[in-house]
Length: 285
View: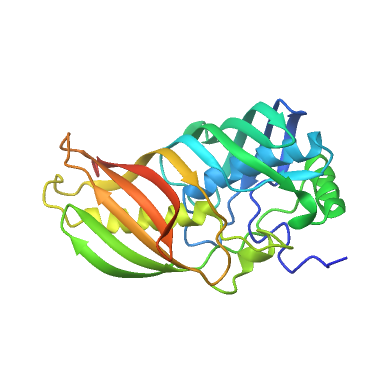
């Protein structure tokens, strides 16, 4: 039996405690964002909700399968999350079968909604391929009891991105080099490392905002944020060391304070992910 790697249940885990649970139906929990982090990317709030749904589904199906990757009908983001804040998580399981789990969920910070996720579907795959069932069962019992120690998440490295083409207000092309080794792989997953889709989304958001910041049509002092991600799909696992081709194409603006973009990801010319981003210009006052 393989031994858990260092960082298991800490390097990319975002549920400290499960406070309410109805197996196969719903759950509540929380995660404390460590104070030592320089930032906590908003896509990780979606990861936290997905992990809460996964805990519910894995326990309901007796740890024989686990959800991996998937698609979401829509993500909506609110204010940025700051280190030291507590994420209050809630998820509603719409269906939970051995082949897939479907759920919606949200995250609040001090009563303010920072993320909503609608109708995400995660394909179920054999647990043994990704993690040790007995370790997952033990962790679930801890989360439902006294909870895990807070402040364990070490953060994630900066993305290795090289811009290869940019046409102002039209498109940007870039290369994203997935690290061959990174601490988060020990948690995502111990037996089969997979680059998290939420980190891919974070890279796409960062690239889109950097590119859009140069546009002249924004009001002076406006702060740009991705507030909506409709129809996000992952079609393939991304293993360590892969080189990803990122494509972001901007649509002509329909409103002065909004822009939309279509995203695509390819490996060796083959499409593996797609989605859309809605960028909003918020007043700095």
